[in-house]
Length: 174
Image (cartoon, rainbow, N blue to C red; front, top):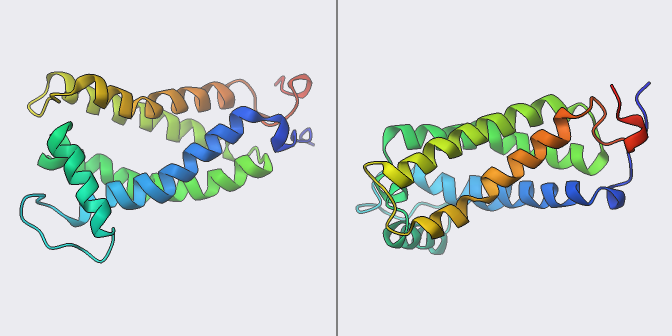
């Protein structure tokens, strides 16, 4: 029988991870990223029903001023966005619940999510630095993307250490 999970109030790192997952689910995946799937050409488009026009304008403003990759949308970039929409979005729903309740079954999915996220973001940041669509505001773009390096590393650390990541430290040994 698995050891009991610590209450969420005693897992402050998990609270931060849950907030990160909520932001990703409701803002990044299904507003910012979805915009890049429903609008194939940021220079010639009609506003879709979703995401809201103000959010579309915000994404385009950021892309035009700091991150040309958001505007050019090469095929490999759109592939990472599809991964986000199809796989990460549903993962966030399950992960929010599992982290809130301290459910150990999310461990493997968390490791997969963190590994794929780190891979995608590394590829994207290489493009931002040296690619055809390199950013003119590299520091700002790195800062804006830092959470997608930091949080996957936190999740990997949390989930890799024990098969019971939500238990008290005394119960985490494998």
